[in-house]
Image 1 (cartoon, helix red, strand yellow):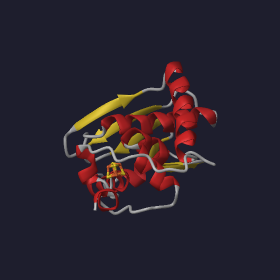
Image 2 (cartoon, protein in one colour):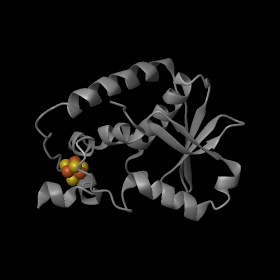
Image 3 (cartoon, helix red, strand yellow):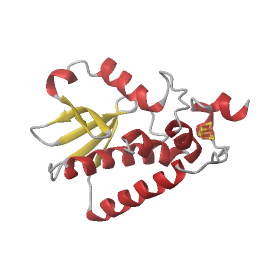
Length: 165
Ligand code: SF4
C-alpha cells in the first residue's frame, strides 16, 4: 500500500485515528486539521496560487510548492499538533528527495498565530521516517483497533463521537 502524508500526520496524533482512516472509516469534516490548513491557505493568502504550484507525488499532494527556491509551504491554523505538522512536512521533503529533488526545505506557517517554523530534512530524519513507515504498516495490518487515547486532542478529532459515544 502507499503511505500518504495523512498517514504520517495521523501516526503522530493517534494510532487509533491512523487505523480507522486506513480501514476506510472516514469521518473527516471541514474542521479537521488536515483540511483546515487548506481553507486557511485559501482564505488568508489569496495570491498563493499564482506564486506557488501544486505538486502531486505518490502519496503526497503539496498544495504550495515554490519550485524556484525548492521550498514547501504548509499552512495550519493551530500549533497544538505542531509535531504532527512537522512530521508531515518532513515527509514531503523525504518524498521530494526520493523523486530526485535534493535540498528542498519547508516552511510551516500559522498565519493566525503569526508564527512560522523552518523545516529541514537531515540524514537522521530519513532513518526515522523509514521507521515511521514500518510502524504505520504494522499498525494498519492489526486486526484489532488501537485503544482510545483520552487526550485533549480527542475533543477536536472527527472520530470523537465514534470513539466516545
Ligand atoms: S477521538 Fe481520540 S482516540 Fe479517537 S481517533 Fe480521535 S484522537 Fe484517537
